[in-house]
Structures are given as structure tokens and as C-alpha cells.
Amino acid sequence: MVAGAWRRLHRLLPRTLRGRFVLIMITGVLSAQLASYAIWTAQARASRLEQLDELSRNVAYSVASTVRFFRSLPHDYRHIVLDQLRSMGGTRFFVSINDHRIPVEEIGQGREQALVVGNFRRILGEELGIRDARVEFSRAETLRLLNNEVLLHDLPPRWGQHSLLMEPLSPPILVVQLALAPQEWLYVATLLPVPELFAGGRWLAGDRLFAVLIVLLTVVGLSWLGIRGVTRPLAKLAGAARQLGDDLDAPPLPERGPRETRETTRAFNRMQERIRAQVEERERLFAAISHDLKTPITRLRLRAEMLDDPHQRERFCASLDELDLLVKGALASVKGLDLHEAVVAVDVVALLEALAAELRLQGGEVVVTGTAAPLPAKPLALKRCLGNLLENAVFYGGRAEVRLADGPEALAITLRDHGPGIPEAQRERVFEPFVRLEPSRSRHTGGSGLGLGIARHIVRAQGGSLTLANHPVGGLVVRLSLPRRDGPGGR
Picture 1 (cartoon, rainbow, N blue to C red):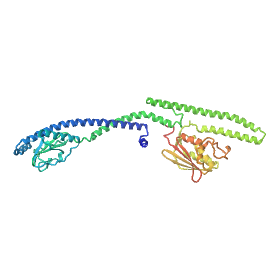
Picture 2 (cartoon, rainbow, N blue to C red):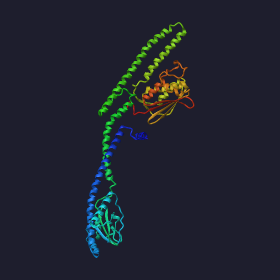
Picture 3 (spheres, rainbow, N blue to C red):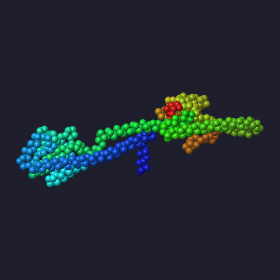
Picture 4 (cartoon, rainbow, N blue to C red):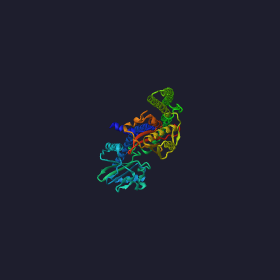
């Protein structure tokens, strides 16, 4: 389970080093921002609760004084005092005496509401001995007053309704109702001037989210520029590594960037120089061997001609011919795998038509269908590759059908002959040097078993692939995929 989840997570990661660096930066910045903001929010809420505790206790003592004052008034004077207070205005409380408890649409919630209600009940109990007071929070839009339950906004301004409004903040209104006598309820409403008192859960508000995004974009943007400068030499190094098999004579990469990048580039340049020296040494070795073998083979051929026995002379000359063919095949193999040819735009269709015309003169039949844009490749190497494949197809099947399917990423070439095909168990073996599956085929009939091996090596050197398969109705199908690159000699 854990391994499967890890594999699925790994598939979601960016494929490039630059993308992973950016993902790490985004994750790190977001984690740091969210952690710091969570700590700040917790501290701010604790400070806010402390301020709310002190404010609510002060208001509770004021409400207790107001209740004590009205309880001390004679019953007949209470409405007179209320009318005077409403006419004077300026009071911080809206007070009324109603014949029933006015329903309130409660909006309080959380620790803030519990703290305020607890302070009011405790202080009213200590100061007045009142234990059953109703302490609730309401919005100004839904607050109802007086016996007829009129809305706050419907009261005339002279009644002091402005004392309960604080536009545009609209803090919650605290409503305290307690029974003075049967069918006599004292109603006290006052502002608790704490904006967004019950918005504590919205700790990631719009302005805060905007600040987080600004910081994130700034850090990621600057990091992207820095990471791009660091990874650019690595991208060039990766491109040079992909082109190493095509162009060993390319100039060395400039050793720039951080120390690790410079050391990696320096090691790559040294590796390229060593490979180039080894390839040149191999070519010199094969050339020397082929040159040195030609002289003794020629001397042996002259001596064979002097033999008296015609049968022995014929057998001896046949062995010398076979040896000479092997030497020429080995030398041709080295030349065919030469890596020092420049990459140019090759017209593959024209190249195939030229090869087909040569084979038609020898009695073979080759049909080419499809079109293709010029392909960046080594022209002589590509010609040798396609020539070997067409010669094999004509030799074994007498007829070859070539189909081209061009695409933005690669050129696909399919060659089919009408010969016996190749058993599946032998399809890899035919790429080995000097391997020929036809037992009756002698070296005098053409070929030394190097053609398919050279063809696949040339295709792989260009970053492509070559596969073999038998056709359902007979014959061998060779499929080539040749990738398109940026341009000749480009890295």
C-alpha cells in the first residue's frame, strides 16, 4: 500500500529538475506562510479574547448600574424617565420596559459568545442577585424593540436609535432582558464595539489571502529566475550528452555556473575527449590490420595459383577469397559506423528513390510510398543503413515495399519483403556480426552478416529505433523510427 501510494505520488512530480525546484519552493513558502499565519492568528485571537473580556466586564457593570437605577425608581416614574432619556439622546443604552420578553435572533457563537455571556451572568448575579437574565447577541437589521416588537430601523431618530448603529462596521448588539415583576421585563440593548466579533473562524480572509499570494508570487518569481540560471548549464549538458553519439567533434561545453555544475561539465568534456581518442585509435587499428592483411593475402593468392592440383588450388583460392571478404567487411563496418560525419537536412524520399533505382538495375523491385519533410541526419550513414535494409529485402524476397509516415517528433519508415521471414528466437541474433541465418548462402553470393548490425547501430546513433517482425501473410517487416532534431549540428 505504502509503496503503491509512493509510486503514484512520484508520477505526479514534475519531470524536470527546474520544475521540482519550483515545487519545493512553492511547498516551502506555503508551509512557512501558513505556519506563521496560524501562530499569528492564535496570538491575535488570544489578545482579542483578553480585550473582549475586559470590555464585556465594563459593559456588564454599566448594565448592572442601569438595572439598579430602574429598580430603585417608583413604578409610575419609570416610563417618564424613559421618555426623557429618549428625548435627550446620547445615551449608550436603549432601555425599555415591556410586558413580555422580546424574541431575539441569536447570532452569538464560539468562545467569544461564551465569554461575554459568562461575564454578564456572573456580574449581574454578584451585583444584583439576578441569575435568570437572558443575554443574547443580535444584528441591527433584525433587532426588535418595545411591546409591538418594532424593528430598530423603523424607530424615529429622536428615540436615540443612532446609539445602536455604527455604520459601516455594524458590530453586534448585546441584548439583556430580565424580569422586574410579572408581565414587566426590563430591556437593555447596547453596542459591543468589536467589529467582526464572531468572524474568528475566517482566519484566511480575502485581504490575508491576497497578502499570502503576493509573497508567494514574489518568492517563486525570484526563485524561478535563480533556478533557471542554475539549471541552464545542466540543460545544455543534457543536450550535449544526447548528441554525443552524433557529433564527437563538437566543441567542448563552456564551464560556467556553480562549482558542482562546472565540475560536471569539466568531467563531461574530458569524457568526450577520451571517447574521441578511443574511436580514432580504433579506426587506426582496423585500418592498420586491414592494410597489413592485404599483403600476405595477395602473396598467398599468388602461391595458390602455382599449385599443380586444380582441386586444391580452387579450395585454397576460395578460402583466401572468404578471408579477404571478411577483412573488407570488417573495414567497411568501421567506416559505416564513423561518427565524424556532419548532420545535414536529408531528403529521405529522394534517397530511397535513388537506392530503389540502383536495385532495379540489378533485377530487384522496390516500391516507395508516402512523403516526408527533410530529416536532419548524417547522409552517408543513413544511406548505408537504408541501402543495407533494401538489399536484404530484395535478396530474400525479390521485392521490397517501403512506406513513410512523417510526424512532428519522428519519421517512421516501414520496409517489407516477401521472403521467408525470421523466427522470433533469431531476431536479436541477426544483429550480431557475421551472422547469417541461411545455411546455403556462401560469401560469394554477397554479404558478410554485418548489414543489419550496421543499420541498427546507425539508427541508434541518431536516437532512433529499429525493430523486426514477421508479416501475417509472409515476409519480414522492418520498422525504423528516426527522431527529428532541432537542426544540423545543433545542441
